[in-house]
Length: 220
Ligand SMILES: N[C@@H](CCC(=O)N[C@@H](CS)C(=O)NCC(=O)O)C(=O)O
Image (cartoon, rainbow, N blue to C red; front, side):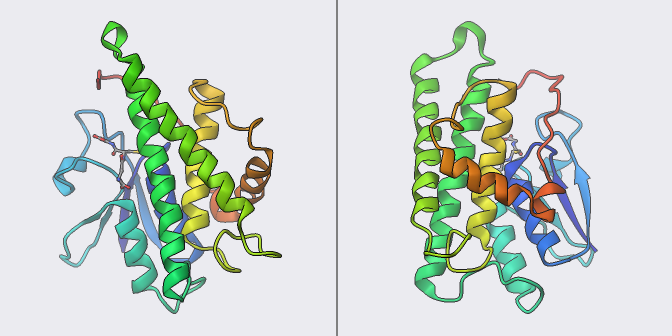
Protein backbone atom coordinates (compact mmCIF):
# COMPACT_ATOMS: atom_id res chain seq x y z
CA UNK A 1 0.00 0.00 0.00
CA UNK A 2 1.18 3.51 -0.79
CA UNK A 3 1.20 6.25 1.83
CA UNK A 4 1.21 9.92 0.91
CA UNK A 5 2.56 12.38 3.45
CA UNK A 6 0.43 15.42 2.84
CA UNK A 7 -0.68 18.68 4.40
CA UNK A 8 -4.33 19.75 4.25
CA UNK A 9 -3.67 23.15 2.58
CA UNK A 10 -0.84 21.90 0.33
CA UNK A 11 -1.39 22.51 -3.41
CA UNK A 12 1.62 20.27 -4.14
CA UNK A 13 0.24 17.25 -2.26
CA UNK A 14 -3.18 17.99 -3.73
CA UNK A 15 -1.79 17.38 -7.23
CA UNK A 16 -0.64 13.91 -6.22
CA UNK A 17 -3.87 13.15 -4.37
CA UNK A 18 -5.91 14.12 -7.44
CA UNK A 19 -3.75 11.98 -9.74
CA UNK A 20 -4.08 8.96 -7.42
CA UNK A 21 -7.84 9.46 -7.13
CA UNK A 22 -8.29 9.91 -10.89
CA UNK A 23 -6.50 6.60 -11.45
CA UNK A 24 -8.34 4.91 -8.54
CA UNK A 25 -5.05 3.91 -6.91
CA UNK A 26 -5.57 3.04 -3.24
CA UNK A 27 -3.35 4.97 -0.81
CA UNK A 28 -3.19 6.01 2.82
CA UNK A 29 -3.30 9.76 3.35
CA UNK A 30 -1.17 10.94 6.29
CA UNK A 31 -1.64 14.63 7.03
CA UNK A 32 1.17 16.51 8.72
CA UNK A 33 2.14 20.08 9.51
CA UNK A 34 5.63 20.17 7.97
CA UNK A 35 6.58 23.41 9.75
CA UNK A 36 6.09 22.01 13.26
CA UNK A 37 8.76 20.19 15.25
CA UNK A 38 6.58 17.07 15.61
CA UNK A 39 6.55 16.45 11.85
CA UNK A 40 7.93 13.18 10.49
CA UNK A 41 8.76 14.79 7.13
CA UNK A 42 12.56 15.19 7.67
CA UNK A 43 12.78 11.43 8.30
CA UNK A 44 11.89 10.89 4.65
CA UNK A 45 12.94 14.03 2.77
CA UNK A 46 16.20 15.85 3.55
CA UNK A 47 14.56 19.00 2.15
CA UNK A 48 11.87 18.69 4.88
CA UNK A 49 9.03 19.21 2.42
CA UNK A 50 5.77 17.50 1.61
CA UNK A 51 4.45 15.64 -0.31
CA UNK A 52 6.37 12.42 0.19
CA UNK A 53 5.26 9.08 -1.24
CA UNK A 54 6.12 6.12 0.99
CA UNK A 55 6.33 2.51 -0.17
CA UNK A 56 5.87 -0.56 2.04
CA UNK A 57 8.31 -2.76 0.11
CA UNK A 58 11.63 -1.16 0.96
CA UNK A 59 11.78 1.25 -1.95
CA UNK A 60 13.12 4.67 -0.90
CA UNK A 61 10.62 7.50 -0.39
CA UNK A 62 9.79 9.65 -3.39
CA UNK A 63 9.49 13.41 -2.88
CA UNK A 64 8.86 16.51 -4.99
CA UNK A 65 5.32 16.69 -6.32
CA UNK A 66 6.20 16.80 -10.03
CA UNK A 67 8.40 13.72 -9.64
CA UNK A 68 5.62 11.88 -7.84
CA UNK A 69 3.25 12.84 -10.70
CA UNK A 70 5.76 11.41 -13.21
CA UNK A 71 5.98 8.22 -11.17
CA UNK A 72 2.19 7.83 -11.02
CA UNK A 73 1.84 8.45 -14.77
CA UNK A 74 4.57 5.94 -15.64
CA UNK A 75 3.85 3.27 -13.04
CA UNK A 76 0.09 3.24 -13.75
CA UNK A 77 0.26 3.92 -17.48
CA UNK A 78 -2.59 1.59 -18.43
CA UNK A 79 -4.80 2.46 -15.46
CA UNK A 80 -7.52 5.14 -15.76
CA UNK A 81 -6.84 8.45 -17.50
CA UNK A 82 -3.30 8.82 -18.84
CA UNK A 83 -2.83 12.31 -17.31
CA UNK A 84 0.14 12.94 -19.63
CA UNK A 85 -0.32 13.83 -23.31
CA UNK A 86 1.29 11.25 -25.57
CA UNK A 87 3.19 13.46 -28.02
CA UNK A 88 6.45 15.03 -26.85
CA UNK A 89 5.44 18.62 -27.72
CA UNK A 90 2.19 18.33 -25.80
CA UNK A 91 3.87 16.56 -22.90
CA UNK A 92 6.35 19.44 -22.76
CA UNK A 93 3.50 21.95 -22.83
CA UNK A 94 1.77 20.15 -19.95
CA UNK A 95 4.97 20.18 -17.89
CA UNK A 96 5.44 23.88 -18.67
CA UNK A 97 2.02 24.65 -17.19
CA UNK A 98 2.99 22.61 -14.13
CA UNK A 99 6.25 24.54 -13.72
CA UNK A 100 4.36 27.85 -13.76
CA UNK A 101 1.69 26.59 -11.35
CA UNK A 102 4.22 25.18 -8.88
CA UNK A 103 6.35 28.33 -9.14
CA UNK A 104 3.29 30.48 -8.40
CA UNK A 105 2.66 28.39 -5.28
CA UNK A 106 6.34 28.69 -4.25
CA UNK A 107 6.18 32.49 -4.56
CA UNK A 108 2.93 32.64 -2.60
CA UNK A 109 4.47 30.50 0.16
CA UNK A 110 7.46 32.85 0.42
CA UNK A 111 5.17 35.90 0.43
CA UNK A 112 2.97 34.35 3.13
CA UNK A 113 5.90 33.75 5.47
CA UNK A 114 7.38 37.17 4.71
CA UNK A 115 4.23 38.75 6.13
CA UNK A 116 4.89 36.97 9.44
CA UNK A 117 8.28 38.65 9.95
CA UNK A 118 6.98 41.76 11.71
CA UNK A 119 9.38 44.69 11.47
CA UNK A 120 11.94 42.50 9.71
CA UNK A 121 9.57 42.19 6.77
CA UNK A 122 11.12 43.27 3.47
CA UNK A 123 8.64 45.14 1.29
CA UNK A 124 10.93 44.61 -1.73
CA UNK A 125 11.03 40.84 -1.21
CA UNK A 126 7.28 40.69 -0.62
CA UNK A 127 6.57 42.75 -3.76
CA UNK A 128 8.91 40.53 -5.78
CA UNK A 129 7.11 37.35 -4.70
CA UNK A 130 3.65 38.83 -5.24
CA UNK A 131 4.70 39.96 -8.73
CA UNK A 132 5.60 36.34 -9.49
CA UNK A 133 2.24 35.23 -8.13
CA UNK A 134 0.46 37.70 -10.43
CA UNK A 135 2.68 36.58 -13.32
CA UNK A 136 1.77 32.93 -12.74
CA UNK A 137 -1.96 33.73 -12.56
CA UNK A 138 -1.75 35.85 -15.73
CA UNK A 139 0.12 33.04 -17.51
CA UNK A 140 -2.55 30.58 -16.38
CA UNK A 141 -5.21 32.88 -17.86
CA UNK A 142 -3.24 32.77 -21.11
CA UNK A 143 -3.08 28.95 -21.02
CA UNK A 144 -6.85 28.77 -20.50
CA UNK A 145 -7.52 31.16 -23.39
CA UNK A 146 -5.09 29.27 -25.67
CA UNK A 147 -6.62 25.82 -25.17
CA UNK A 148 -7.67 23.83 -28.19
CA UNK A 149 -10.99 24.90 -29.71
CA UNK A 150 -13.78 22.75 -28.34
CA UNK A 151 -11.66 21.30 -25.51
CA UNK A 152 -12.22 22.03 -21.83
CA UNK A 153 -8.71 20.92 -20.94
CA UNK A 154 -5.49 22.93 -21.10
CA UNK A 155 -3.51 20.53 -23.26
CA UNK A 156 -5.20 18.25 -25.79
CA UNK A 157 -8.66 16.82 -25.14
CA UNK A 158 -8.12 15.03 -21.83
CA UNK A 159 -7.42 15.88 -18.22
CA UNK A 160 -3.66 16.05 -17.67
CA UNK A 161 -1.07 17.02 -15.09
CA UNK A 162 -1.44 20.56 -16.49
CA UNK A 163 -5.09 20.93 -15.45
CA UNK A 164 -4.32 19.32 -12.10
CA UNK A 165 -1.43 21.71 -11.37
CA UNK A 166 -3.34 24.77 -12.57
CA UNK A 167 -6.40 23.82 -10.51
CA UNK A 168 -4.30 23.18 -7.39
CA UNK A 169 -2.54 26.53 -7.75
CA UNK A 170 -5.80 28.42 -8.23
CA UNK A 171 -7.29 26.57 -5.25
CA UNK A 172 -4.40 27.89 -3.17
CA UNK A 173 -4.90 31.42 -4.54
CA UNK A 174 -8.62 31.25 -3.80
CA UNK A 175 -7.91 30.21 -0.20
CA UNK A 176 -5.33 32.97 0.22
CA UNK A 177 -7.63 35.54 -1.39
CA UNK A 178 -10.55 34.75 0.88
CA UNK A 179 -8.60 34.18 4.13
CA UNK A 180 -5.60 36.51 3.95
CA UNK A 181 -6.30 38.97 1.11
CA UNK A 182 -2.69 38.70 -0.12
CA UNK A 183 -3.78 38.31 -3.72
CA UNK A 184 -6.83 39.31 -5.80
CA UNK A 185 -7.41 37.49 -9.07
CA UNK A 186 -11.09 36.62 -9.44
CA UNK A 187 -12.25 39.98 -10.78
CA UNK A 188 -9.29 40.53 -13.07
CA UNK A 189 -9.48 37.08 -14.67
CA UNK A 190 -13.17 36.08 -14.94
CA UNK A 191 -12.60 33.45 -17.69
CA UNK A 192 -9.88 31.79 -15.62
CA UNK A 193 -12.13 31.84 -12.56
CA UNK A 194 -14.98 30.24 -14.52
CA UNK A 195 -12.69 27.49 -15.87
CA UNK A 196 -11.29 26.79 -12.40
CA UNK A 197 -14.79 26.62 -10.85
CA UNK A 198 -15.76 24.10 -13.53
CA UNK A 199 -12.67 22.01 -12.71
CA UNK A 200 -13.37 22.17 -8.97
CA UNK A 201 -16.65 20.33 -9.57
CA UNK A 202 -14.76 17.20 -10.62
CA UNK A 203 -14.95 14.54 -7.90
CA UNK A 204 -11.17 14.31 -7.39
CA UNK A 205 -11.04 18.08 -6.91
CA UNK A 206 -14.08 18.21 -4.63
CA UNK A 207 -12.54 15.53 -2.39
CA UNK A 208 -9.25 17.41 -2.01
CA UNK A 209 -10.24 21.03 -1.42
CA UNK A 210 -7.56 22.82 0.62
CA UNK A 211 -8.09 23.35 4.34
CA UNK A 212 -5.86 25.84 6.18
CA UNK A 213 -4.33 24.92 9.54
CA UNK A 214 -3.12 27.01 12.47
CA UNK A 215 0.65 27.19 12.93
CA UNK A 216 1.53 27.09 16.62
CA UNK A 217 5.32 27.45 16.18
CA UNK A 218 7.25 30.39 14.76
CA UNK A 219 8.48 29.59 11.24
CA UNK A 220 10.05 32.79 9.91
N1 LIG B 1 8.76 21.87 -4.79
C1 LIG B 1 8.11 21.13 -3.74
C2 LIG B 1 7.41 22.11 -2.80
C3 LIG B 1 6.78 21.40 -1.63
C4 LIG B 1 6.47 22.35 -0.46
O1 LIG B 1 6.91 23.50 -0.40
N2 LIG B 1 5.69 21.83 0.48
C5 LIG B 1 5.37 22.57 1.69
C6 LIG B 1 3.99 22.19 2.16
S1 LIG B 1 2.76 22.88 1.14
C7 LIG B 1 6.36 22.17 2.76
O2 LIG B 1 6.46 20.99 3.06
N3 LIG B 1 7.05 23.13 3.36
C8 LIG B 1 7.94 22.92 4.44
C9 LIG B 1 9.21 23.70 4.29
O3 LIG B 1 9.37 24.39 3.27
O4 LIG B 1 10.04 23.61 5.16
C10 LIG B 1 7.11 20.13 -4.35
O5 LIG B 1 6.59 20.43 -5.43
O6 LIG B 1 6.89 19.06 -3.77
